[in-house]
Amino acid sequence: MPEIQDFNVLPKVRRQGIGSALMDAAEAMVAERSAVVGIGVGLYPDYGQAQRMYVRRGYLPDGRGLIYDGRQVPPMEMIRNDDDATLMFTKQLR
Image (cartoon, rainbow, N blue to C red; front, side, top):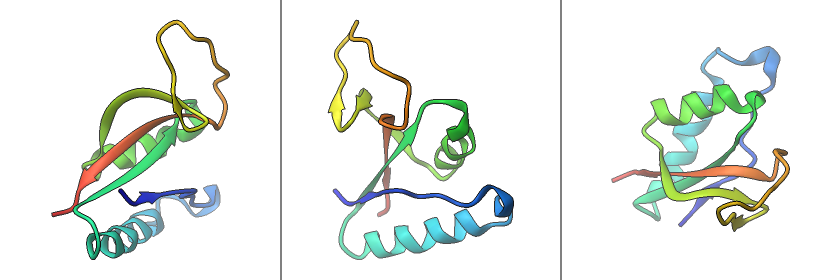
């Protein structure tokens, strides 16, 4: 499944529609090849706006739970809450 990676809008230009326009373009490109797109998002507050935007756009958690550095974290395992701790989302495009 294609995955949108390293998606970011500079803080000083957020809330101006730039992120939505970029996501529209990325999703349109993916839709040419796949019915589903994935994206990961960090868990700490710096990622709060992105978490909310993805949900508003129809992305849903993929059901695997916490991912750290590309691998699923088993129950009771301790990890650092850094940029490698993510929740993965998917969206049906067609």
